[in-house]
Length: 196
Length: 202
Image 1 (cartoon, rainbow over the protein chains, first blue to last red):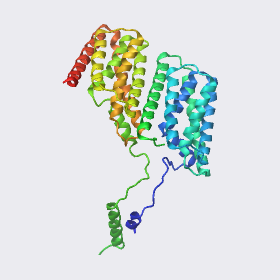
Image 2: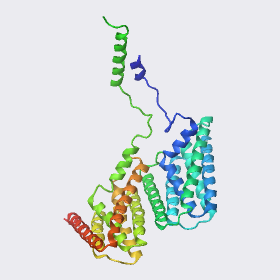
Image 3: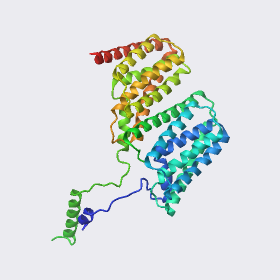
Image 4: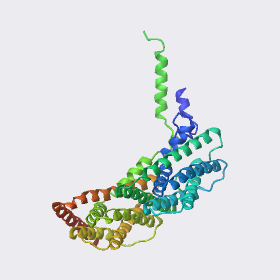
């Protein structure tokens, strides 16, 4: 009987991260284990911190709210195709990383627009083809909460920085994230959309 | 005398063994290959000595030039290198890239050897130009099947670590013996570059 059972397995559609602690923590873990999600959020938090507490507060709220909205839209099947989402991810890596590396002052509205684009595109990419169920909404809430915490923490790290080498280190991280974005754009042109 | 249930246990064990012999493809695990992609990307910049010497030389030269070149050059190189990778990925022809990579060892080695101190923008353009060719050769060689993000992450990290190694070694520049050692290292890099250039021209 065990042999027969193994011979006819159903197709497995496991979620990437199942912690066993419920959908809220699944959402948190999904964010923490997805570099395409947490790298731009950390860079966004760093650059927001460099631009002062006002931008740090604004972006820490804007990004998770946009992420939640993006996830809800994706569950309602309102999302662009894989290519568009992949390109958006790559370009956002480039823009957010480049903005951190350049460390120039940017108006709060421009920063908020970038944060909204990041939240919408990554929220849509994460929750594309997911059914609008209670568990998925809880998971989306977990992801958004994690984004708020990480963005606020990253901003609070760079906000009081005065030592030159620390600022340079953060800017170097930004240049690396921008470099990732450039490589991803090339990859998408050559091989198509990246996996989310 | 056999213990009760032994025969049944043997049957179950045999059935399970049989089941193990007939595995079907498991597609549940979505993170397969990510680690491999990262390691592959990490290995790419350190796969050739011609790449290594040039990237370490960028860090050494930056340390010799001091602020702000010490961090500006290692920031410029990965960015322009990624742009070169982008050009390689989309298939833009860039002839003579292997020759330029070998030349980068020669020029950067000579710069470290002579403690060449040009304007910052000249140093940036020089380093950026060589970074373009290094990135192009990596981008043109990439094959499908890797996770692009993890591969790129490994690739950029390895490049950054090589620069950081150069900058860290370059901090000995504050001492007289350190300056001499750095210039000696520049001579070794120059010889390495000439060796690769000779190999390319033959």
